[in-house]
View 1: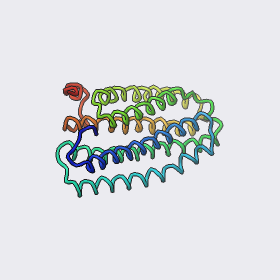
View 2 (view 1 turned 90 degrees about the vertical axis):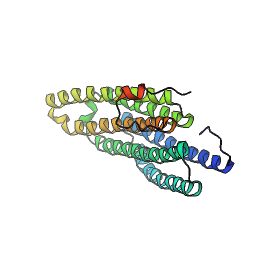
View 3 (view 1 turned 120 degrees about the vertical axis):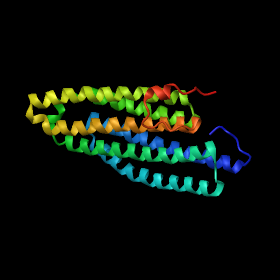
View 4 (view 1 turned 45 degrees about the vertical axis):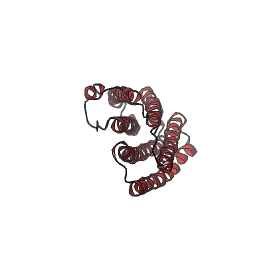
Length: 235
């Protein structure tokens, strides 16, 4: 939050919450990156590392939400400050869910590591979409830290690319399973991984939508992209 308040301690509260949110976001980024590395290598110790990190994310979600509630109770904020606190809580929930998706990916990789038939499936689209989801999440966290609505709008546009990769992989996977029934079990694991990546992109997009909400006071969840595009740029 760049706006200054008459109360320096209130400013400190908001900056501390932003810092905690970015810390949690960094951990989620690490979880996703590790899960994608494990997908490349079938590294089971790395899989277990991702699964262990989920507990830390759960703890952080509870801690940050408690801090948000305490600030609201003490400061009784209004207007943009209240929107910021509500958006912070919303973003924390989305980060925790993105971390859950990373854990789901890790569990599927553990299953795939014991199924050699899965090694023959071309997963180029999964790798591409995983990298895109990770980049979108990083950009969404940066946009939230700077309250940059133009970057947020671009993230909302870019999420479509992840959806396109998911659909392309789905078509290829169905063909692969029809041609080789032995690949069906592994194919289902890859399907769940691809869907988890798509959801990570959705959670990152939700963070970007929260930026628009804080700055403009308009809730753009479930709104068409055209409406978001039509909103005024930052002054």
